[in-house]
Length: 469
Image (cartoon, rainbow, N blue to C red; front, side, top):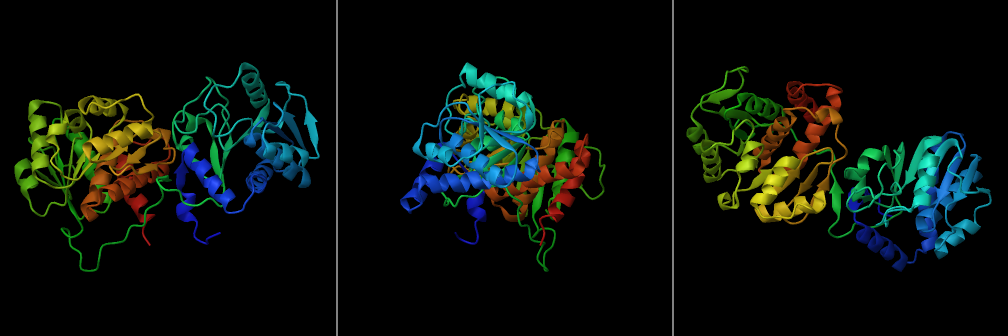
């Protein structure tokens, strides 16, 4: 196995991609039974650590996810962990039957009233596409209610892997989920990700798959060069509007995200709360400045005809653009002129963009983000508790679950300012989106609970420090 597995371990696979990855391993000489042993024993070690000597109940289904459960149970038994297996269905695959034959511990009847310390869900894995039948759903929910710790293997049963949809209502909430072989889309998508608890991972040696999505990771950000000055570090211009507070929040975040010069233009100019921030009422002059490296428009802009004209002016300036908030509601396909763009919609803005670009809004979030990125030829940051970055080339990047404390007015303005600042530094839209989204999430983590958007904006600087060598 290659020493540097980091790119492989970041990949996020569809069901089809995971099957292809496993087929590659099998074609290379690894048997299905050996793969099951690797996955089950790796998961078993995680379960052993979490159980810490407490009794474990393993719920096994008929497929290979159930086979993983039999391997986990035997691993726990050999490590002196009290374990019993509930066979919800008899093994239906060869590998699962072989794993069942190798288990030498207790098997008990399927009874939802069974209680214990730790439940391991190996009922169904990532291939599930239909709701659990009534008897298995009742068994699963009953057992989950009667165990203090609940561990899902690969995915919680009842979750559709590629979309993150819940195939049954009122599925149990799990304290841990252990991904096998690769991350799946559902690990990062609502509503699935909100019931998964702490995520853990077992590497079984799959290779990097063509077209795979990636998980967002901490960026490596270099300090300015020794000869840098405020323009070489990146000058970002922010177009303000009728609600000056939003633009000021974006500007504050941009100052902490690495740009050398942040300039805010609005007419009328807002109250100058920060002496370090350059504020002007001459929007045209700012947009015409040849030293401007990137422009942000949208926070507090308003949705009037005058605001739409400002958006057209921003496109005409031919500077890399971050388009957020009100500007997204005003954006029309005819405005696009080849200017590099980053769009940062939340769900409501996404729906408006789909109407404007005549796109289908009924697909999964990842497919919707990809469709908009291609239609607008822009990087799309689809915001939410399960934020996704989509590139026009089809690339997808999933962000880890965000702090629920970000659900307060103004935090989107902070994200837009952070992304615009990074765009001004190096003029790479996809890279700027990744850096900005990671910094935003880390700033929220550092802020803790019940923070204001102003506190979040100030924490961007501390988040950036985490990325420096």
